[in-house]
Length: 151
Image (cartoon, rainbow, N blue to C red; front, top):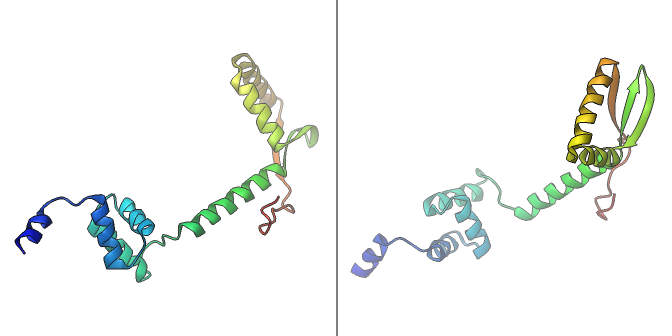
């Protein structure tokens, strides 16, 4: 009994904390490690958080579903960008129209070159003074096929 009390005063290793979480909550190593990391190493907070999740009060730690949600969001954003156009207009007349990915690549290339950057800024000011408009249009009828992961 004295040895157990002695051990309680010593700081626990991460592995011991994970073992305690696994034993008390009936979870696997990965979930216990994630709970401990999210609680910044605080064992009592990790136990409390896991209990809240079990009772439906805390955040859900289903990382697979979260990851799939993030992936679907990224796919949707890429699809929206790839089916968008950037147009330079003056008085409802289109001067030039580019696909959004091409327009972004062109803008990035111009911005990376100091001489072109200054020319682009002067051109932007001149275009604003002469009432030119930059229009970004999205074709909403396109979407990616979630079943195959293709766009």
